[in-house]
Image 1 (cartoon, one colour):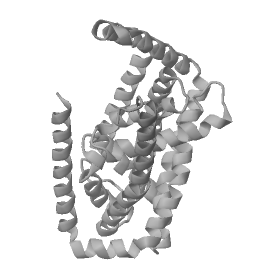
Image 2 (tube, rainbow, N blue to C red):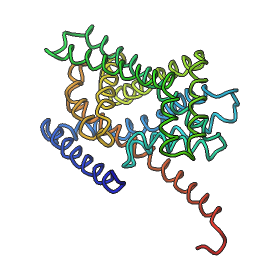
Image 3 (tube, rainbow, N blue to C red):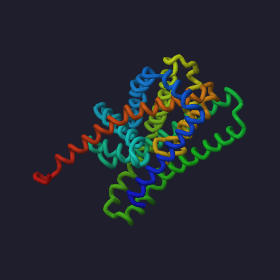
Image 4 (cartoon, rainbow, N blue to C red):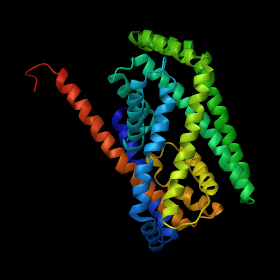
Length: 329
């Protein structure tokens, strides 16, 4: 599949998502949703934008803690690369995998060896997936202890969590046992890239042997998930919307689990809105307020992500200009 087909697929998926999101908003009433949006207002949006510094700092720290040895000056490199990773994965039309590559590249351009940047990215993603499993499990516990879930939801939720655990387990097994096989494939297809692939595989294995730092990364990622959920609770609380912090954590955990499962949808458009509308009432949040919260969070992603992408693009542009031969422009 060529790049043009991938871009076309991303545009079509985004279009379908926008239609689905519009249908969801229309089903619950444009007027009610916009009233709820106005109720949360600029204050809630400002709080979410400013508060996002905390989850980003935690995410950067989780990646940084895989470093060897820890060098305080490198923390900002991983924090910035993580912001670019998320912004590119969410806002640019080339999937979350592309965002991971961009994040590793940003780290490399700031002095992190390429093999180490890609190895730590792989292990950091693994730590984040394990933390999300724990966060999703927390959401399910909070839902099941709050009330009896609708028929079929409990079984589907548990089955989905079990599939996710199996997938992450397979991902870890490949990292620990299958890197030689992957390196062999790379050697046959792209012989020039084989040494770099082998070096990256060795570093991934080394990172997994250092279980203490990996466990610390998982805990920090879990803290980031919790912090992100509490940011939504704070925005609602300032708008006078009463919902307990545990309830919002349960809602955020399950919505993010659904959005991660349907990762092919750009920015989770449509999927996120439908998830908030369906799951919000189970935690005491009306569908209009839940959808409004989703839209406010999307605005936050744009307000934070677009400047990050602009700075990254400007940096890339300056680097290319500086490397270009004189007189080539």
